Image 1: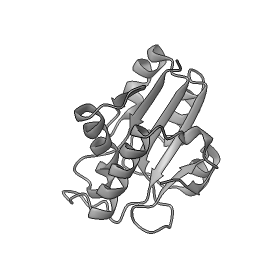
Image 2: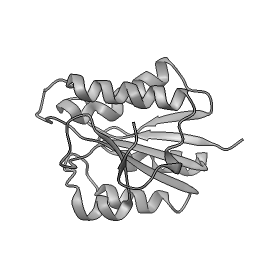
Image 3: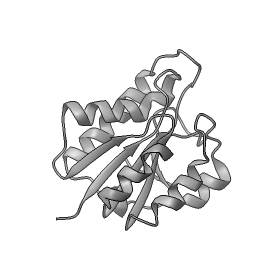
Amino acid sequence: MSRKVVLTVGAVLRGDDAAGPFLAKLLQEDPVDGWEVVDGGQTPEDEMAVVRRMSPDVLLVVDAAQMGEEPGTVKVVDEECVARDFLITTHSLPLSFLLGELRTCCQNVVFLGIQPAHMEFMGALTPQVEHAVRRIHSWLKTGGDFGASETSQQVV
């Protein structure tokens, strides 16, 4: 059986940037068979050693990403697009660097972006993004395989 890990990224005090930590909470409260979760929070690079030790076959990285879509849109995004098109400013290292490093220990790294509505400090998670996170959790529970999704395509 392949080892699969969800690495969530985001800041709980920045509105829709809390999408990743909210998914981590859902996965801890209602685990999905075959998936383990690591909550990377605002500094996911701090969890790189944990992920390296786990050495997953599939690593799903989930974070809010400015993609110019409707709030709550969920897409698999390739690493080049993350580096070129998405400005993710709440993390101490560029996410493209993190993804590149994780590729050295994981067979398949998939970045799943969730379009936020807002990321203001002390803002709440919007209903659209909360619904998107719940769809991701449901998709995982029903055997969803994000690695098989087309790059830069809406998946759930």
